Image (tube, rainbow over all chains, first blue to last red; front, side, top):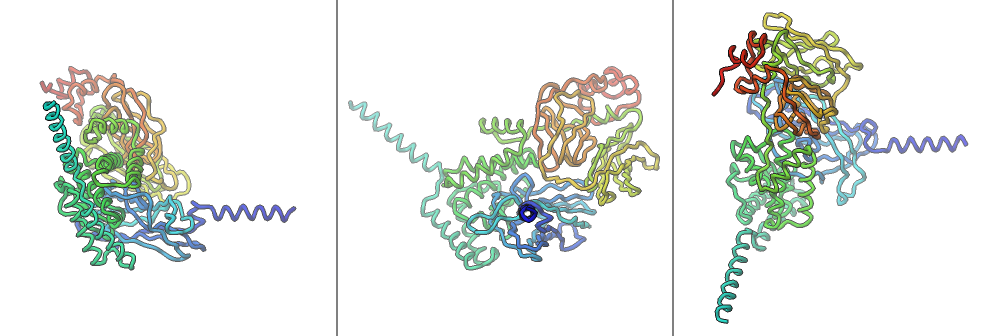
Length: 166
Length: 439
């Protein structure tokens, strides 16, 4: 009887560990970095977004890294704060679908990254210190054509990157 | 009989002319022209299948040719475009429009090169629809989450109108409808109804919200100085605060102190300032009281208020929710709205007019009410989203100073004199410079 209960509990534990949407258990992290810390006004600010599998098992992750306003299709949205502590609005309108076609199997310890020109999306000319935080989110599985297992789903907040505009 | 035959012939000629005219008006490219564009795109696919990257020179050249041919054959008006749309190998999604004066700079991504009609409808979306909004900017290139949603609903509606001319497949049309619906669903009920009405009338989609009046300054800026704050803020969040007092409101020092650590901000000309609690409270593990003070340039304390700093941060990109939108409000009073994902820049819209925010954080906002009298939709425009709305009755103010200002709206934003505070009647207000009647 004890053995049976042990097996049931072990089964429940296994299912809990395998359930999707648990970012901590699945060990995926999202970080951002800038190519410099001080920029001249008008100089391109280049940002790299990185997903890292910090867990022990491979994960299917969406690495399209579509940067957009959170009310539109996106994998990444940014909170960019200017020297007056006001948010900078996304300057572009983007036509895209919710379904990404860019999924990969990310092995433990591996990373996938994308670089983009941050200042194109969030232009600003006020001199002073800025802070940037990225939010990664994935809600969908890979399309059937990619024949991949269920993807990692959830959301992650990045580190805060600081830069100065002189 | 001859007459009947002649009339029939004329009718036939007219019908034939009508069909020909109509066909020409649809501007559908010929199958050969579509094939010519598609051949370029197929070559791009071949190169991609061979492992060539998006920025391969041959792919870039083919993309340029396809984009130019699509312009020519689909006859997409380029008046609103600042230069020829360019292929951007790094762009995720099909297309992107960036405001450039009264025009748009357009980029096309690899996803926009999927097929000839996908390219055509993407260009139409960016150049004609977003470009049209840019041409009428700022009134139609709308700011914030609400503005983007309205702009996108309009752009996708424009694509749907042209679906036949661009030869879109049922699958493509379904995808456009789905995207349009997602943006539409992010709006509040009142704005959905407005868009429905504008769409039926064939009119441009606009936001139609009047700016805040600024009447809080003369109404609240009386007697003792008062600092408006919200009751709680996340440790990694910002809080907007406002000082109201007689005289100058600019460049006053606002200091927030949590567990012995302080952060400061200076007020703008309207007495508003934003405090960044992440610089002093990140890492706290329990609710921690904080004090906020306002001092003048001489260091004299003008006002103090308290708040509670809660551990953690907010998922600010979730939809804004307002838990206690009022069923009725009195003009000239201060209202507190509680919710989630509001943000330091949150604003309340009431009866077609933005209300002046006095304090705001992720979970609460304090608002001075000055809305057109009567029933209207009320909702919160958060930093990144729009809350659902409800119908609110805005009642006339019983405050005589407010009534006086309402009748002389050119005074809005100017602080009343001491004398006006003491005898706040319409007559006194006029006598003391609260206004000379504009008539």
